[in-house]
Image 1 (spheres, rainbow over the protein chains, first blue to last red):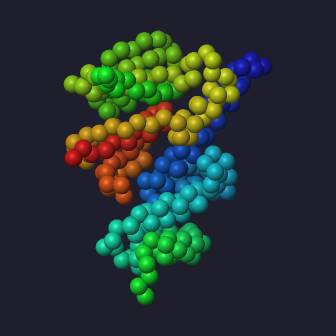
Image 2 (cartoon, rainbow over the protein chains, first blue to last red):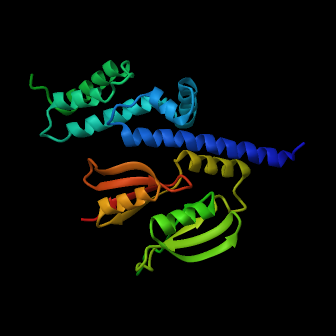
Image 3 (cartoon, chains in turn brown, yellow):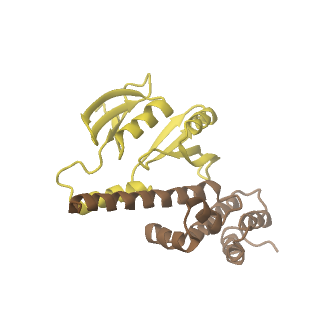
Length: 126
Length: 136
């Protein structure tokens, strides 16, 4: 039988390893959100089932990896819209195209989000 | 008053891994190294800039930190939401290549930010965010 303090230290070390793995997933989203990327690919790379990754990521960071990815893309699109020479349609297309490759359900949402942002940032000329 | 910013602190969870990152990957010199085991206080800094240092220190070493607080801090370090620092260089691309070649975890490739600066970001072995911006 092992000492309780030792068992606790081992459990804490395991917890930190799990969190570090989630951190690598989040860093990968930060690094690659402009490229085609989806939760299945993230889960595969992390060696976790997609459902488990989503649950643990949400527990650690307050939102699912999918929601985090969409938020990063929307942020990037909103920033691009603040640059005057870029056409609104180009930004919308670029933000939504990165969501291909499996995560199709994010596309209508992202289009709506970016279009909404567009309406707020750039007065409509159509 | 004539104040300078002398030493900034970053926590480590594995002193040897952090030492290797700051000394071998970032090329910093080691200015002092005290303590033993996990309780090591290691001062590092850029060669030729003796006025600024980073102290790599064990987290929550203050005896008045409670057990719960210590656990929270070490978990935040692991998930990457605790320590961070902003470094700067004149040649961002060469620096990025060198640090990346040293097998550091890349968080962001060199990018122009909407607020004007161009920077990149890495993780140190303890999960601290190391942001490096380009001096113009």
